[in-house]
Image (cartoon, rainbow, N blue to C red; front, side, top):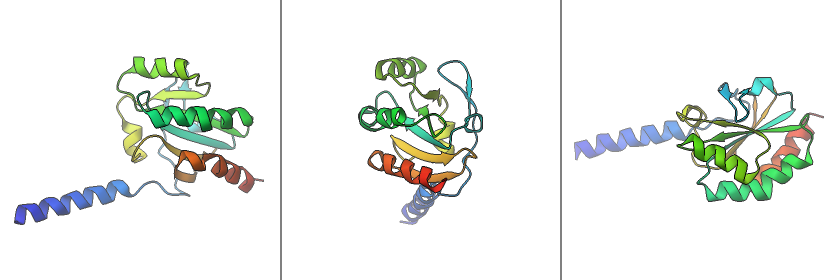
Length: 161
């Protein structure tokens, strides 16, 4: 009984710590990873007003659906001065990541989170997961659902006028 109680406390503590996702107004954990094009990618190297961080994987059906129905139309409807996307792949194999970028026609910046350090530091609960940040790396919207992405980007841009 005592072992069960201690295990339960440890489990609840671990889940609570993980569930405390990054919040609006927080500075994002910085990163610099090699992109699909061989260039280093980081938020501080992007000059867009709004940056969408898209956590995804090639095996994720909802990720693919979101790319087709939300991300591509969103990306195509704004200039890069207004909106940029950084795709952060959770794939286990680099080859799967590269193949999905070609197959899905992803035109935006993409990095492979090989060791899952970004998934951990951003406390990503599931994929797809989106963060909307400004050019200074401040979170404007956290753990956004695909269905909310367009309106959250409009809201973020409007707040910068």
